[in-house]
Amino acid sequence: MSVELKGRMIKKLPVVNGESRNGNKWEKQEFVIETEEQYPKKVCISVWGDRVRELEKFQEGDMVVASVNIESREYNERWYTDIRAWRLQRDESGSLPPLPPEEQHDDSAMMDDGAGDLPF
Image (cartoon, rainbow, N blue to C red; front, side, top):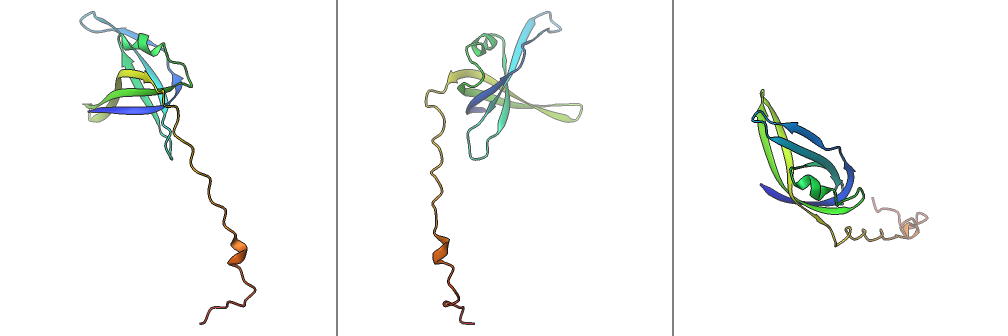
């Protein structure tokens, strides 16, 4: 499943290195973005291998667009979900436009001195 997530990078976690059973070296880095919706969500995304170098171009506070694959797997009867970025771009469109200001209503016109009593 491929999805595109847009948001502000709020945290870059340290690079993690390791070696597989076959002796192949690997590295990964995770980062957190916060979406700019009515109800913002924080999403932790990982990058592997050469994408770690690509992530170095971004700073905390940058607006990013991450193309990701979402995958779940089972281990010991528990499910784990991995959100892995395969492309990172700077969001040149900036942030979402601000919500329009709420209209001011004159509530005094609705409050009469009893002259408009209900008919029942």
